[in-house]
Length: 176
Image 1 (tube, rainbow, N blue to C red):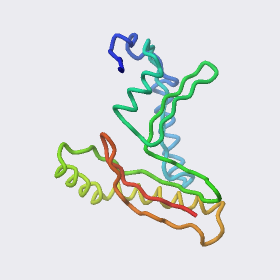
Image 2: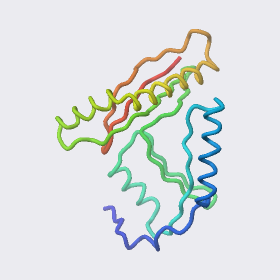
Image 3: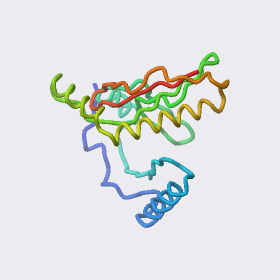
């Protein structure tokens, strides 16, 4: 059985790898790069740390139950443990075939089948979500195209909705 009660966690969050001011400066710098055309999109992040007494493998097992995803990792190396769960393949290379599967555009799951269908329809009609997704499909095509023969890149699937335990994502498949 999986036992992840709150008593396994230490005091509240105390540590980040950057100050609030440094994060604000990173946002401003990212905006400058976007305006200059250097980048289209960026996901700024920072690391937060919290002491826990929970067994990392039990956290991984709980994640498999609570948020099952096709790409899950438990990696222990050099005093660091990484537990990750993602529905996104990013890029796969297998037997001279490259597959890129951008996921962008997300909405929560409904409580009923009918609500799920309504939320899916809203997601696919959301101009901002769709524009972001199409931009990532274009970037995926460009990235794969850098190593592919001219004319060999194709979009196998465009703007399909995939359902996961708690959310739905718009998904496409770019390949050669």
